Length: 252
Image 1 (cartoon, rainbow, N blue to C red):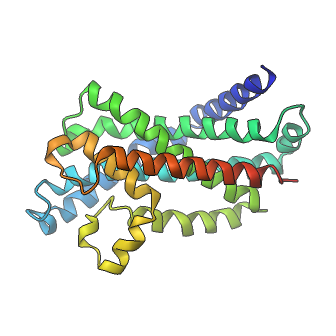
Image 2: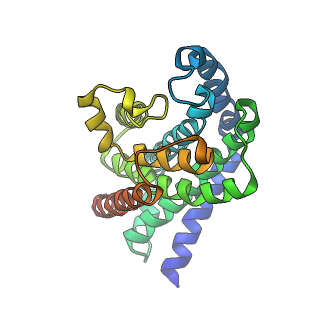
C-alpha cells in the first residue's frame, strides 16, 4: 500500500504542477491551432487529391500525436528541476522503491500529456473532422499508450543529464526526427524508400496511424490494421519503461 500511495502522490504532484502553470495551459490551445490553421492551409493546395482527403483532415491526428510527443518529452525536465531544488534527493531516500518513483512520474506525465492532447479535439470542427464522444473515448486509451513510452524517454534522458541546457538540446534532437518521420505531416508512402524504412522503427508512426484509423475511420485506409499498431505501441512502452526504470534506479 505504501508503494501505491507513493505512486499516487507523485502522480498528483505532476498533475497539480501542470494545472497551475497557466502558460502551458494557454499553449495547449495556441500551438496546435497554429499548426492546423496556418501550416494545414498552406499545404492544402499542394496535397489536394494526393491522399483522398483534405490535408487538414490528414494532419489532424498527426497534430494530436505531435502534442502528445512534445508534452511527454518535456515532462523529463521535472527530474532536473527536482534535482536542482533537492526534492529528488528527498524522494530517493524515502522508504519506497525507485521503480515506484519512476512509475509515479510516468503516470503523472502521461496524464498531463493526454490532457493537453485532448484540447486538440476542440478544434476538429475547424478542419471538418467529425469527432463524436465515442470517437474521443476510443482515442483516449490510444493516447495514453502513446504517452507512456514517450514520457519514459523524457525521464530516461533527464536522468542522464546534468543541466536544463543539455536536456533541451537532446530533447530537440530526439523530438524532431520522431515527429517528422512518423507520417504526422506527410504520408509515409511519399518518403523515399530508405527514409520509409527509418519510419518503421519510429514508435510515433504507429501511434499516429492508430489515431488516424480511429478518428478518420473509413476515410483513411491504413497499410497496418489497428491491432498491429497497438501491439507495436505496447511493445515500445514495455521496453522503454523497463529501460527507464533501470537507468533511473541508478540515479544518484
